[in-house]
Length: 170
Ligand code: S3P
Image (cartoon, rainbow, N blue to C red; front, top):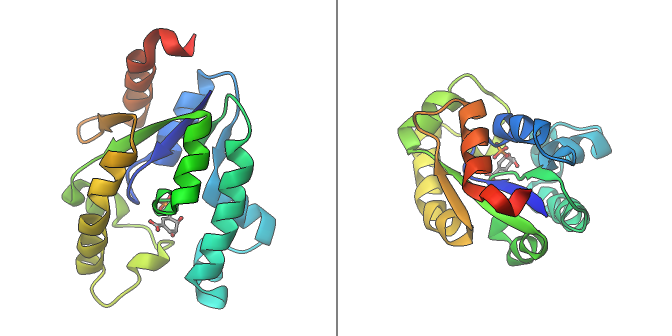
């Protein structure tokens, strides 16, 4: 079984994923990192030079590949599950875990980053709000498990997930 982390940018998927993988049999995989390693381009460069549809195609290929494996901790880019094929593939052998936090907390966590091409607008906070509002119900619906990360450190989120999963993971 794979553990699949989903949620908005800034949710802490990569950080939590690394802590989870330390206590999980298989490796940690970050779909964005895999895309960057394979193309030799940053996510921002892919968006700028090739456009979002091209990124989504790369993401779909990577998701379908990693979803076939077992015992991984998979951190998905914030938009990945909105492609129904991606979600279907990830659910075949994965527990989908939504790392939830209010927009204000996500924005605080994102404030020093520059590698989120979707928020590169004149009004990044408004853009983030628009995107968050359009997606939050989708994250909830897609999830087998929801963890509110607002007050927790990444390591605490990871431990909570393992506790929730309980006997299923042993
Ligand atoms: C995206 C989120 C990013 C990255 C890309 C698109 C999105 O990943 O995949 O910039 O559509 O929300 P993170 O959620 O890891 O920031």
